[in-house]
Length: 283
Image (cartoon, rainbow, N blue to C red):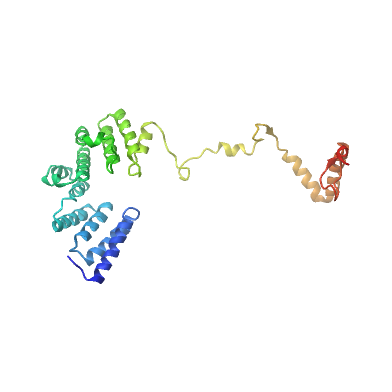
């Protein structure tokens, strides 16, 4: 369907904002999608964009309506896996499994078929059929050495299904393989792997995290320099010297230092020699 130029430009601007904000600000993306939908509800691309904006904000009923509308307009089965996942979101995993066995799946490309496996395995896990979920994900692409856009998610889903089936040792290996393939950080496989290894990550900036203040308390005690030598700080002596200086005895305070320097063989500084130096070193 063609739109008048001005209207088409307005719709395009809203669709650009949907694409730009979908990952970072999904609620804002959803708002832009509704504007585009009001302007051009008979355009398949608008219905699809509105569907994805609803999907990422977990408005699964709205998303399913938009995806169905787009599919009717285009006749394409490309959205079939995400439509099945909407059924899962609505608490109907059985319906998602029915869609996984429908003829439309054969119309999907390789990426679409992998996505359908992921949805079907997720539906099995929803029904606590973890062994069946494991079998669903076992395909040639799972063990392929070639890294494709879906590889990390496929390995991650397989590892997660193995966890549900009580096969943690195998799951650890597959989480590690998922980490290797996850070049853009699309999964939290590294975190799951660390959890299995007993490693716990702590956010130092989290105000709820308790920080050990033992080192801070030690600062009030003896100071230790980089060589490991303990230096005792005489705070009382410093206080007495400060009081003496404040009472007008500062001149005597410095005279005492000069007497000590003379006893040790140092001469007083002068304009020519601004630093103390031993008498024996003078010309």
